[in-house]
Amino acid sequence: MKLTIATRESRLAMWQAEHVKAQLEKLGHVVSLLGMTTRGDQILDRSLSQVGGKGLFVKELEVALEEGRADLAVHSLKDVPMELPAGFTLACVMEREDPRDAFVSHQYASIADMPSGAVIGTSSLRRVVLLQALRKDLRIEPLRGNLDTRLRKLDEGQYDAIVLAAAGLKRLGLAGRIRSEFAPEEMLPAAGQGALGIEICSSRSDIRTALAALEHRESWLRVAAERAVSRAMGGSCSMPLAAYATLEPAGLCVRAAWGDTHGGLPLVRAQLSAAVTDFEAAVRLGEQVAAQLRSAGAH
Image (cartoon, rainbow, N blue to C red):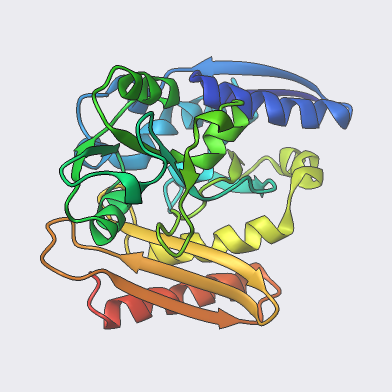
């Protein structure tokens, strides 16, 4: 089958698309890439929560799917809105890379080593509230741009340290930039962090069939529960929310955290475990964790 992949043109997005392309070519498909610049890539002077949220990274790719210029779109799943527009579906989740957050700095080996008043950069409200819970004495400054841009700003001395997704650094061969990785207990990851999701038009059952061999069921179950937490909470870029699921002997364990970016309310945490064998059960578990968050004061 001839397939065209729509992708953002950042270095990380292109790596991800090339990775999917290689997997599909191993299955005998003929694959090309359609690189695109999205609104999310163009607007760099404001936070995503101010300009429209995660959908800014996927809208142009969805138009390409709708118009038939592409057959599938590859996304970092944490950038995909919890509710897709009518006519589109998440057809596949591939095996997850490291979901943790990474501490990157020239001067300091970990966040514990940073002196009071030091500047740490992040573009994520989730990371802001979790960093505040760890170190109230640090200055947390906004950080936008693709991965290379964020690293350049650190190298120029605009920040003493920055927080990035470990997965992106590892995929681009930049694991050496990581000084330490936050344990999930310290910095609970975002829903879907480290996972690649493939979006198609709902009507393209032929593409769904072609992608079946790339599916990683364990990763998909985990992120289905995480995204259910976020969806039930109205999750978006303006929601300081973390959700992370692990498969353990007792079943699927879903942990979540919600914080107040103004610092007026304490961090709210929730956790539930259950035996889960299908996506419907994973979603229900995620919804139960969201209900637990709300009953504890999250909103």
